Image 1 (cartoon, rainbow, N blue to C red):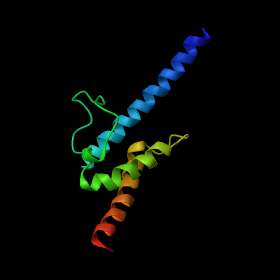
Image 2: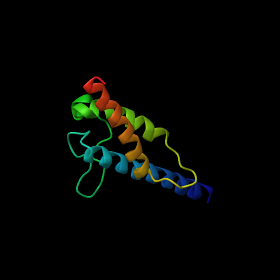
Image 3: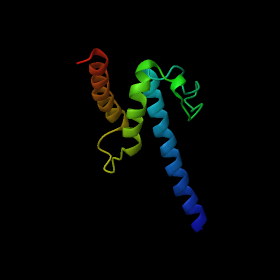
Image 4: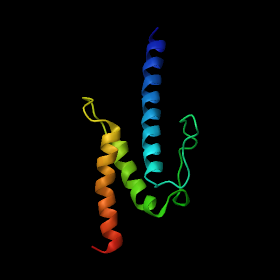
Amino acid sequence: MYDIIYTSIGAAVVEDFYDENVVFLRFCFEKELLKKNPLDRHGRILRMVYFNQDLTTAGKYLFPRLMQKFLVFTDHKGKTSLETMLKRWYTALEKEYRSQITGG
């Protein structure tokens, strides 16, 4: 019985992590940070490893920084959605990126 409960909890954690990765990768593709859609037409992740050649010019700067924020994000109280946080982080990072490429 303990193994079943443990497995169920573990499966739920893995499923949540997978779902959050889907949200993250979809967001990155929609913001044109990734050259190719990382999801198939059913919303399943096609791959989990990305190299510089998979990223757009902006993606080379923004993707790793956004991913770092994504990986440490926790909202134990459930007040702020991942989508909301991705938008906030992206807006701040994109502003930083734009100022770097314009030299200001």
